[in-house]
Image 1 (cartoon, rainbow, N blue to C red):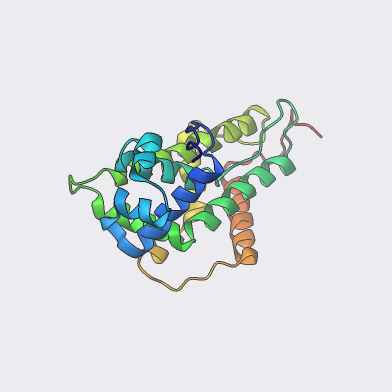
Image 2 (image 1 turned 90 degrees about the horizontal axis):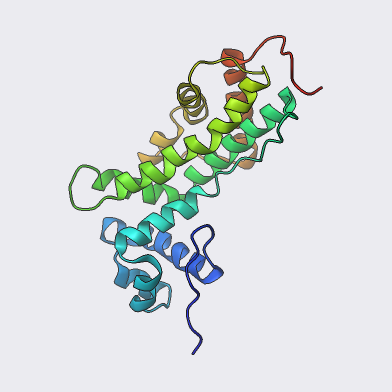
Length: 216
């Protein structure tokens, strides 16, 4: 029998991704009751392998949240080459990815469990989602916002505050409606439109009307 792959910090192996997918599926079925045993059965994986890879239930859930959040990515900014069109493209990319992720039924299940466990003292999924979701996403986009400010395309004092504004513009009431069971359908076209609207409104608030110092 082949040995299980060693865990990787940055990117899970294909077999590990199968386990993380199984974890998300079990959240749909079991909710807060999801366990290492049930994930091992669903993934056709031994508990020993799960413990070797992830340590415990909290480690497995942390890896699951990180992997899900990794889908909300934003393209790299080439120093000195950022213009308004590139900035808009990065904002729209980020918003589109986030809307696609949070509207999936597995993300809805994950966030419902996190909300249910928050403040109970039973588990720490709420803290895991906050740290590896919202806070990690802020750290991912704020360098883009700061690059926009350096290129004199944006004007703001605090990048965290600017990120919170953009997050509010792209999120609006969408996630809470999904979590509360609203049959809200986000097609690819709708997601693209929502992302473009958020970027346009953000630039209306923070954009420099006649930018100088940017490429082009």
